[in-house]
Amino acid sequence: GAVVSQHPSRVICKSGTSVKIECRSLDFQATTMFWYRQFPKKSLMLMATSNEGSKATYEQGVEKDKFLINHASLTLSTLTVTSAHPEDSSFYICSARDRETGTVRDTQYFGPGTRLTVL
Amino acid sequence: GDSVTQMEGPVTLSEEAFLTINCTYTATGYPSLFWYVQYPGEGLQLLLKATKADDKGSNKGFEATYRKETTSFHLEKGSVQVSDSAVYFCALGHDKIIFGKGTRLHILP
Image (cartoon, helix red, strand yellow):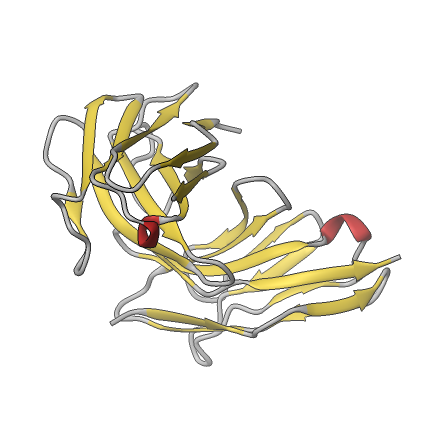
């Protein structure tokens, strides 16, 4: 099946610093990528939808100035957590939709996730 | 708004037992329905899906039927294995996917 990678898999940073997480579709082109946040023992919460070449669409309650999303190419989207605080510590997961199929009725492929710990 | 409710875990079964994980949904229109699985230390993987009423998704011995009349998409497997131990997420999708809270499954040898 299609592969989506995330880098880094784990990151620990100090409060106040910024952290960038990369999401790559390795063997397909993705016009749309999604960023989720997963809290312990809870579901995935969609943070934003990232479309190649345009601004991301953020879900209600998600601060766009804090969680900067860039989707500069058909295979790469980045999430930057700016001025990170301990409450931003979480598991961040991206997914990518295959450009060839394109609709939500087809498969989204998920990355393995990035564990962010803010000290 | 749209939502997914699934049974809370953890669910603990012995190997070869029958599995059911209940999932019900609330949605406008006719969304696609999914079951995703997350094995320890790995990312989410699509297990099966159904795109319209009465469709049955199946994979790796797991099955789920899209029941419009009961707004349900229960996951079943006739004989579970230790390797099925994972967290299972029920989800629905229109333009974006909405997930349930997940059910952790432990299979004992």
